[in-house]
Image 1: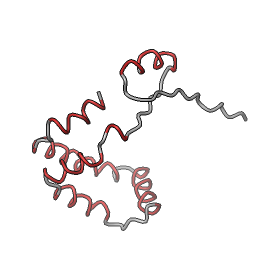
Image 2: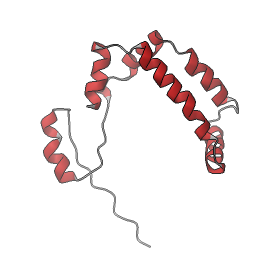
Image 3: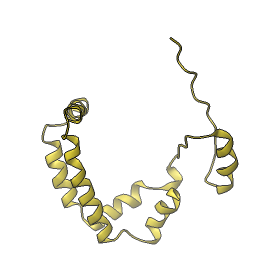
Image 4: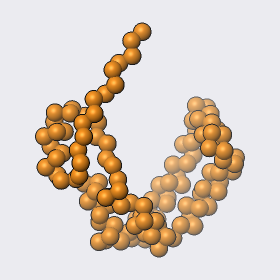
Length: 119
């Protein structure tokens, strides 16, 4: 389904309503980065580690609001190329081995989890 949605970007361009809904969702989610002491500290650490200025989120809101439909569509077509992506599934290896290869999504590799750490 993920790949079908990404492929659909080429057949059915993003609508202005989808952009507006996504824009509002992103902007409305930002206060959550500052609503508790823990989230505020985590956000501050993230800014520090990424060497971002303290007004990053204020500028981010302006950037999100300025993104127009044509730019969003162009970026989606440029960066969301299913053939260049890898999908990581976490689950029962036996079940995935039966269900995923028939979907013809590309190479399928099972990797065992690392051994549990001992005390």
